[in-house]
Image 1 (cartoon, rainbow, N blue to C red):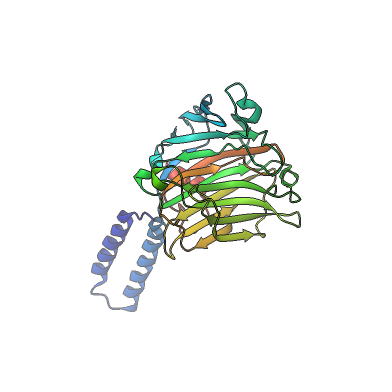
Image 2 (cartoon, rainbow, N blue to C red):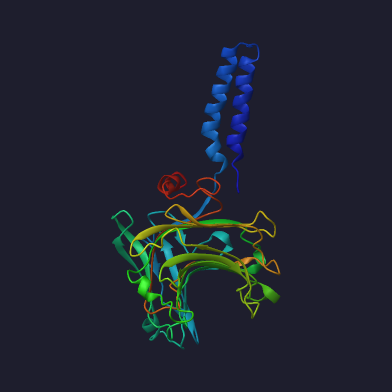
Length: 354
């Protein structure tokens, strides 16, 4: 966590000043005034100790657009997000985190070309009614062909990719507004193997043997249980590419916080990487914590994070798989206090850090 040292120095200066003024006053009144002033100073300064830096913000506002898909492989392509977001002043692609790509990765179950990619995946930036009913721009994505129920052969993650040679992302907080499609409950199918899940967020490491393969993944997924109800599953595993057999290191299922359907909700995620007990992975929905794992979250080879899948229309269920996202923010720590959700504070905090 980054700590602003200026408020701490200000506190020391004020304490020194007050102490000097009251050094010759031994009465209860003098001590009381001194204590009161300290409380007032602490009240102003304490919130700033948790200060984090805003690294990137985009509402997909005016000035932001999608480029044409390019770099076609046999089963995929890439699509850039470009331009200055005039609502926030931040420019795509993302320059923070040492990113060398920030946009949409198009992955398809079948070979595609520039003329057929639209049959599988479509993406657009469009104006819609936002979280408070106001007009906002959203990035809307739709995966139309996945290769059959339970196969999950196509996906289109909003991806931030970075080289493994520049070190890790030790502390990061990401938040955005998101909306699931109205038929999510029936889109997921718990009667067919591997058809009962839908990705919300994930990250992976890379650099194994100087390749893109990694040794660790952390993810948040919507699951449909045997009872037909949706719940949140958050876990850390070794699904990064380097291993053929999956190992789950930790898992937290949350059946209490509801999965919002056909309405905007605020998603928040934070992690601190460590091989010790101070490691953390935290996630919240509309201010309610859905997971707060504490403990080791490094892989067998201590590889750095190279891929952050901010959101992803990726599911083993029925097609189509739809994504609605707006109001993306990236910080280098908790903006509203350690382990504190910004659900009710984010609009003010964001404007203060513009």
